[in-house]
Length: 334
Image (cartoon, rainbow, N blue to C red):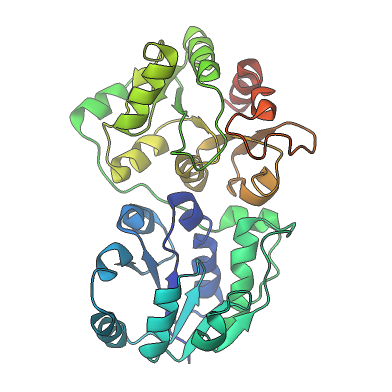
């Protein structure tokens, strides 16, 4: 009987959030199971806030150990199965060496043919399915149903804020105005909306009775200031002031968040906060593949098929979305 299952997802925050529905479905179908997430240390707060997983293992620390030490560690845990959601050759090899009985991966990775004993035929490149649906296809290796409609994902992979906020942040959230978070940067992981658009949106929101907050890392805050020549006016600049657990709680206390296809956008969606995502129509970056999966989501994307700027950082289709359009989407919800 498969009881202790390791989900290996050692990449970014947004990718991990879109993997969480797998944990919900495993727990639903295998009620006695334990689901442990293997991820990078910066994603640990996401797993701590998630409602379905039972634990987290830090690959950022484990990968520093020798192969034999990692094998011994995995053997002590006594996993019955591992699912390689984000393929990693070393992890796949060591899971096999540790003797984990059921090892599930895609058949497209050559090394899975000797490290996995249950291989799922799965191609992400040209698929019409959402990323979460593609992840769920791997559950066929456990005998779990993998036919999940996109609307059903709204009930899966939810987060619950658990961290408390310091006094200064609590004071910022003490007013009666509706609160909107703008997260302009993505560390290069997504096509970004022009910073001037965020600046104009902040002014529109502020003049219409909204409290506006800018989030991001300290370096992203500095980059915004360099691009604009000043900080975004009409907004509280929170760049570099919060830990990830604090950011999760802070977002949960706001009414909406605007961003490109980034981790904070998926955090907002998983918390039930109105997530306004700005996407390019380029496959596979388009919202059909990477949109947030929550109930309270608005996707902004040019209504056309376009790949003209596939190999450029600037995306004209992203700039087709105007601050007025985003403002109207926020106001319509609130």
